Amino acid sequence: MINFKSLINRSEAMRAMEHLGRIVLQYRKNYGSVPSESYVDRVKEELEGSARLGKVNYRAQWLDFESTPDEILAYTERYHHSWLFGKKYLVLRLDGCVEWMDKQKLGTLLAQQQSSMETEMLRKKSKQVSPPLF
Image: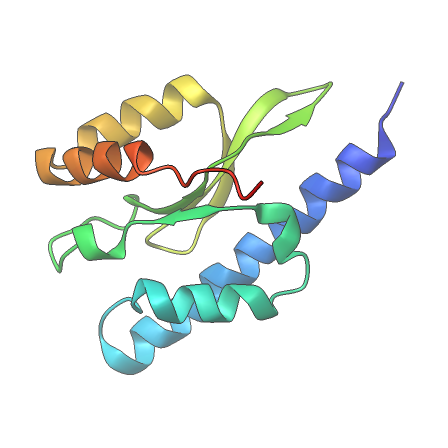
């Protein structure tokens, strides 16, 4: 049985990430580099379907002019489930391509692409979980 809500959520998330990719590519064309995380956060809120993306990990500060087009620029923190494809994360590459990726493949690629400084910063960030508001 097809879960239409899940299908719509996945397609809206894909569309939002593709739109974000086009914005990043246009910025890169105009200014010669990828935009800052604060710029992307601001733009992301205005994208149709951005709520379906959830938290996006944006890696621009870890990329440089020697980065290859297939490097991961951004990825969703939460997975999207499909009965047909299982649990997949949405990934935006530096060249603007957007794809669904399973956790193992995403983890392997990030391990190859992340510096020790980036992984350490992510580890510290994940430990700084805010206390509940109630």
